[in-house]
Image 1 (cartoon, rainbow, N blue to C red):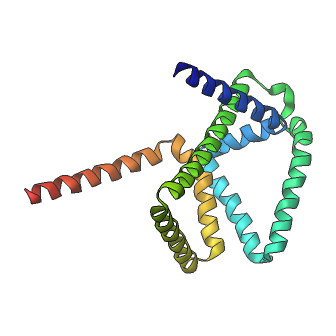
Image 2: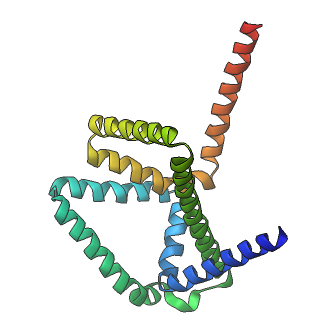
Image 3: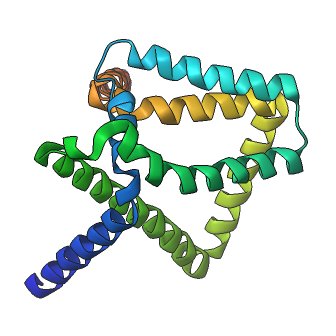
Length: 203
């Protein structure tokens, strides 16, 4: 058991080191984005939402076709992949890279590896469910897709995408400041109260 744990830890460390090497040119940008998404300053959430709102308003105003939007997105990603590693050290100053920043960069890469592992784990569990309980798999997938199709029919696609992107970008800050934990605890307390009241009525 210990050997398996050590192997898993070593593999995790190796994957994290590989990701650090791949993202080294993006280090300054990633750290800057991390500070914004964790709301290190009070005005960061407003600035983040303002930037997202401007981008989506621009898309709404231009109303590009799917092919045009996809082409522009890929083009911007290619430009960023080429320009960021070259310009980032000049803008942020590579000589300002400290031990604390390196540690935070290492933590971010570790969290990305953990997220990747979770996604792969969920996919494997879904495949296992398909093999072992095909009826449950079929019912779950069809129900989820029908619910998503109904929501997509009721809400405008662009507005729904705006809500999803905004939530994902605000999620790290909400976690950092304990907002999600606070409201999750409140919901759990209310559910427990309802269950206790129901038990008393049954008695």
